[in-house]
Length: 457
Image 1: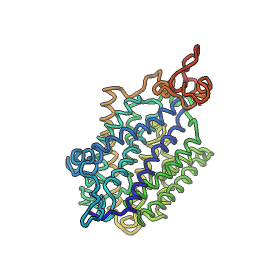
Image 2: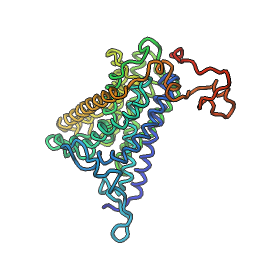
Image 3: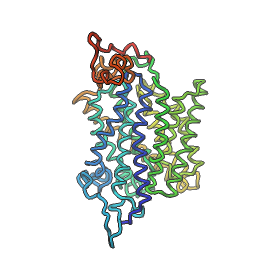
Image 4: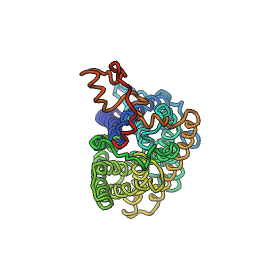
């Protein structure tokens, strides 16, 4: 076991905290994009993922992701480290020196607990990302069940395949016979995975009531931009933390993350200005997220110049791609497919061109590019098939879609009994009270009327 490196351990714990902050940031980003009658529901989807996934990852998620190989490398054994058994750090090594028990990187001196903390936050935000595709119309109870089943059936096996020594790792068939696919921080595991899942669930749910008839504009652009800023901030932990230690590689990943995000924002705004004659706040926020997504798989493998190119390409491509859903008639509410699936695919494939060690632009052959395409295609296929199976099973068992009346009224009041902007209720309830939250009303006051008239808000 490697001696404990307190600096590296501190960096990984800090990175884990930064990544965890991304989920509330995502809640703001998504929450600002929906109509005001569904803000609480949108926020709750992200926050509930922190609850459900935060428990199951400790119970069996880590073990399925990083413990051994079963089913031919498809997934890790869920019982090997169930409840994190055998992963606790040992603080007294030979001669009384502190050691890092089961360090995931023999030379890093990072404890297993720090690594588990870091990986747990990745699983949480991957599930939360999907919620943007099902906004405004999914049953909350079904979402809770989906978050547990999907992360178990889809995310944990894919994490094992890419990062845990499974089928898409250096030890898998592609790595042995061609070259190891590269995914520094989750282009396939997180973004392609969540993007495909979102598209499949949007298909299963069907379109929102009034889709392409009633205005469904973002109700709070400042929320969207605040959320994007929090995502950008937390993403430095996401990518730089994936170096596994406080090293020069972490610094490179940090710089590449920043430059790609900036370039993508410019690329997205350029497309908007040419296509729509406006450069919008939502576009700036969405472009930044597209750049963050695209640089995720490449952050430690490309130069800063390469990161600018990846970001600019991704920003422009994703801005164009979100228009495809209208042509296809697919109601991917908040463009999870257009940003995360497309951005993750672009970033994953472009490693084959821009990798400073194995990329085409640096004199290498096309093996890395082929390996990247295979990995991206495998992630699309695996996530698509398993999400379809999980979604159909839940649809049959308990239904996926909220009742029509609940959808028209707004899921905040109908499902959660709350309103994000209940100013009238607050004034009636008296200063400093929570009567509007718990349903108490003065005598004679009627229940809140349907907010179907507020679809333009």
